[in-house]
Image (cartoon, rainbow, N blue to C red; front, side, top):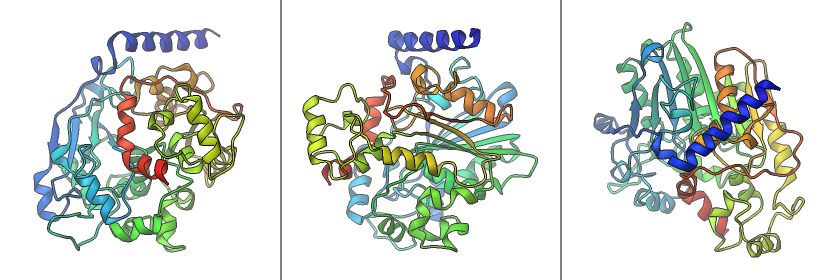
Length: 413
């Protein structure tokens, strides 16, 4: 009971702090580092610009530990989509349009808010290839797009190895959404670059996709097949190897799956949003107008509405079933019921909002204890048969724009 009170007090204190000062007040924004040398080996963004990352150096007993977080932001499956993406101001297709991102959640350097990883070398690998870091096609047009996501990942890893990561004691490869899918794809291959003495694990956030838009077009356009897990592509069509259920059971490296059973991105893919619906409804259920809710129900092409919450219980059951496939002896699980998508990058969900907690444990604590082998954390919210509106970060409405490509497809299909 004392522990519960302590955690709730901390959670409330964090939320109050946000309300007073905002997320950016406690988050640092390291310089954007563009890897110009990678251009010579064809490791480039969709528009041919150099790949980029942000690095906040570790200190004290965390100086030999590395956390790499792959940015998310959907993907492109046609030449036109990729051309639009590379010219968009989001920076998801060009490093020339990128802006520095603030480090919060799993990336923050605040010990109170990120007690397990705050003093590690923390790297935010920026996403500009549109292929979840899997593409590698030699052919290209002079004006782009270039399909080189796997080369981008390898080039940045090579650079970080030179900067000292090769001597790491502990490594955590993580990612959100499309970045989390890339994390799972590269998990075993990246682990093999380190000696067995290095503790190496992976974290996938909001990436256990049940529904994907045009996976065959994705794989063909980007030339991704040779970079998807061979344990999967040797048994089935490469496009099917974008679905985590088909390759995650074969991952040998310890993997932590963080997901909401009511992932908003996948809800929108399952229950179609009406044309012109505000994307804010994907993040804020309580702020979604009644007129939109009714329209959503009427125009829903997947007619599963559950307790008037615009949700598919079928989606929830599939996620709960698929994340437990395969050997669970080393797998961490944290499957809550938040009406949200990514959770590791947003401070209120990473450490703060009581509604995002399971078994009186924050996501931060769950991942930290699992990584340190203090506890095999496998928490699944099976109690809530409908979603919970969890607190939004001040930065989260802006994050909605990071999923323009997905939202465009989902809202207008």
